[in-house]
Amino acid sequence: MTLNRELRRLFFGLLVAFAIVTGAAAYWGIWERDALLARVDNPRLVEARAAVRRGAIYDRTGQLLVVSEVEGQRVVRRYLRSETYSALGYYSLRYGAGGIEADFDIQLSGSTIPRTVEDLLLNRPVVGADVQVTFDSSVQRALINAMSARRGAVVVMRVQDGALLALVSLPTFNPNTLDQDWERLREAPQNPFFNRALQGRYQPGGAWQTPLLAAALSTGTLADEVLERAAAPVRLGNLLLVCAQMPPAADLTLAQAYAYGCPAPFTVLTDNDHARAFLMIPTPIASATAPTATSAAPPTPTPTAPPSENPLRDNLLGQGTITVNPVSMTMLVASIVNGGNAPQPYTLAALQPPDGVWQAQVATSPTLPIMTAETAEQLRSLMLNAVNTGAARAAARPDMAIGGHVAFAYAGDGALSWFVGFTTLNGQDGIAVTVVLENTRDADAAASIGGTALAAARAELLTVPSPTLPQSGS
Image 1: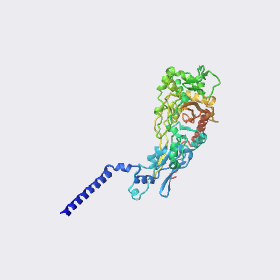
Image 2: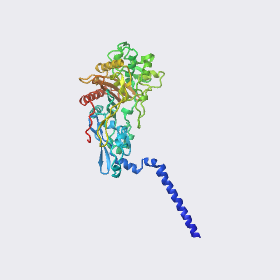
Image 3: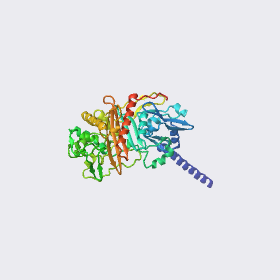
Image 4: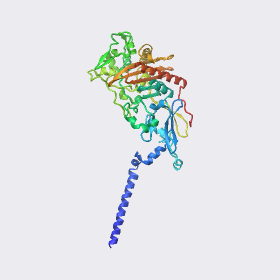
């Protein structure tokens, strides 16, 4: 009798244990299946990601920039051209993706490409699509050389369609050694992970004179009217705002004041309808519509001046609460070439699925109205004059018509040097550029880098007007 009782207890105990194991298996296998599969420490998921052969990346001329190579049992991502490091971002099995690698991760990783039964049976690795971007390696290289050890950003855009020909952000890092360098890079005070061209928001300072002048011209202000004491400095809290380059006279026309980057004539606009008209311009250059940061970033630059009783005046002088992004400023300049309409930037030129053919991608985003065609025409003339006779003369290049504007801004305890400019190609096609240099008041350096960018981009577009599709299978 005692033995039977013990056997029954043992049987029921085993039955309960079996029920618990079955319930747990059902819970993890059915209800929590997706969460379990998605865990970053899931060894099967890590193994599957490690076996993916991400697609290659090419520039607009068909030059190979990034490739995945099989080394033994692992796939290694190789970045082949150092001048494109800051434009392309990175991919790491451990740390994920950033930049272009993140923007086109779905295509490069092949995550949406259907797997056949044969692929599964033979355990074939996932192969992603190849991507061609709008960047031009030659333009990137010219800018890296021109920037040297300076810190800042450069954006180069084709006016015709908004194709980004170059994105430079310095300092940057080598994505080939990302895993080894991650902790050092993450703690670096200059924050090389922060893409200044795409994520940066800067005090515009005198660079704000370009959209402000557009507003003034659109409401009837005469650019050739002489203004007294136009070259005088402007006191703003503990800041003293001065011309980017001292003009030959104290009294200047508005056109001359703009050419030399003098702030005084623009302060009077706070007292009339021009300022209110400026604030009503439907422009993408304000920080509210600029690209937002997606990674750790240094603090947004803030004005040195204390709170003001006239915040409108501070903003119109570029030293208030408004901050701008280099890409958005480039859109503004492009609109001056494009009859007042800003093209929207894009970076994808073509795709090639695995075992497929290259498929060109056409930009379809509508342009954004910034100003009237008449205002754009006036601004083009004034910016050409600023390079020919004003403070932006360092941007001039032989046999090229370049328009531009240089300016200073102040953020925290440092200064910024700006150059925005353009050159035309045919009709309303052309090239727009924005340069911002951190911790310097070297206007000539900013203008010279801008001129280098425009000359390099013009040479490339005249040689290769449209993206050249890479050879299939290359």
